[in-house]
Image (cartoon, rainbow, N blue to C red; front, side):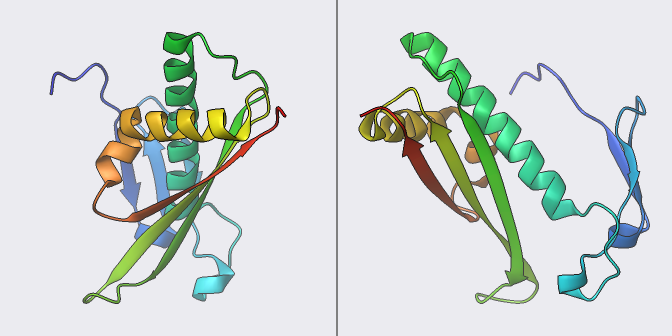
Length: 142
């Protein structure tokens, strides 16, 4: 792979620490969510992954739609990232649900676009075969 861009971030203190990018644009404290026995009040890795995946998938959706000259105005992608025990072995595992809303397209058109996007999105390509990713697609045009 020929890299077009490389992001750099450093974490200290794990899930109860701090994360910062080399340019300082991203810089905040992390905290365990109450659901995992922590105090909350800070971001956590699952939120960061949900934000990154949803932004990347939406960008890929816009890219694919642009190539096909398809209207995706008003579209959005909401990422839901869950963490739980790994049933297949030690440790933990992630699961992802992406809610993809494309109101300018019919349900069938939106589903076809989402599937095509899922083949293009770098996060989808990175996770394929490693974690479950569910696409919930909603079109709005009758």
